[in-house]
Length: 362
Ligand SMILES: Cc1ncc(COP(=O)(O)O)c(C=O)c1O
Image (tube, rainbow, N blue to C red; front, side, top):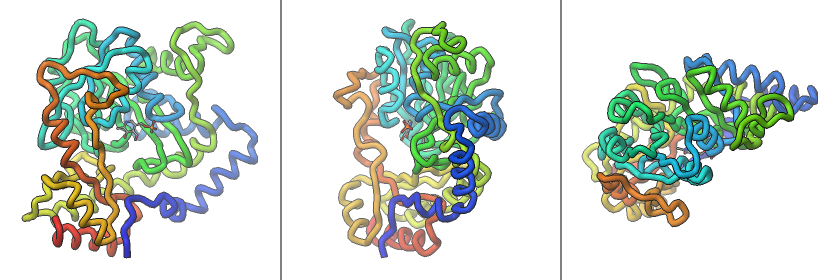
C-alpha cells in the first residue's frame, strides 16, 4: 500500500453533502461574484481569527502583493523576507517593483530570525514578511521589537490558518495578514482563493480598493496600483462549509506530526513535534542525506516533497540579495528539509506505515 502526499478528494468525500449543497446554492442563486457567500465568509473568518476585517482576494500571492502595497510598498522600496519561505512574498514584492532583501532563519524553528530581519532593514524598507512556515506560529512580537517603528509587518499565514501564539491567532499579530486557500492548504478552496486580515478600518478600505481596480467608488479609480483579484461565490461557499471543521482538521494534523516526531527519535531525521500553537500544515524534518532518505521512503511507498528546495536569494528570477547577516541557515535547510504526508484524512494505518518507514530507513 502506498501513502499519498495529499489527496484532496478525501476531504471532499468527508464533506460531500455540505459541499454539494453549498455549490448548488450558488449556481441556482445566479450571483457569482461578491454576493452573500463572500460577505458571510469575510465576517466568519474575521471572527475566527479575532480581527476586525477580512477581505477576500483571488489567491495567496495576490494577497501578499495587495497587502504590501497597502502598507506603503512602492517601486524602489525594500521588502525583507526569510530565505526559506518559498519565494511567494518575494515574487509579490518584485511585482510591485520593490527590491527583496533576504534575512536568515532560526536553525531550530526555521522561522524568520528577528535579529537578522532587523539588521536587514534600511531607510528604504517598507515591510518585513513574517511567514508562519509549515504551520509554525512565529513570534511576531519578537520581530516587531527588532524592527524600526516605521517598518510594517505582513504575516504570511498561507500555511498557518488557525495557528496561534499567546497574543492571538496568526493574522492578528502584525499590521496585516495574508492567507491562501489553495486546495491542499489546511483550509482549501475548490480552486484558488485568498484573503487579507486587517487590524484597522483604514487598511481594510485600502485593501478593498486595491483588490478591485483601485476603485474608491464604482467606476472611479481613486488609487493607483489596483487590480482585479476577487474571491468568487463558489469558493466562498465551499470555504464556509469547511471553516467549521478547521480546528478538528488542524488537531488531526498535529497528531500526525507528533506521531512522526516520536518515530524519528533515535534516527538521523531531526523531526520536531508541533509547538503548542502550531497547526502542522506540513510535516517537515531535516536529514543530512535528504535525497537518499526520500528515495528509500519512495521504495516503501511513502510519497514525500521538499518545501522548499531553493532559497529566495538563489532564485534567478527574483534578483534578491541577502542582508548583512547573510542567510546561511536558510540555505542549509533547503538542502536538508523533507516533507512527509500530512493531511487530516490520512488513516491511522497510513500514519503507522509512515512511522514504520521512518524507523526503518531514516
Ligand atoms: C507560505 C506561502 N505563501 C504564499 C503562498 C501563495 O499562495 P497561492 O498559491 O494561493 O498564491 C503559498 C502557496 O503555496 C505559501 O505556501
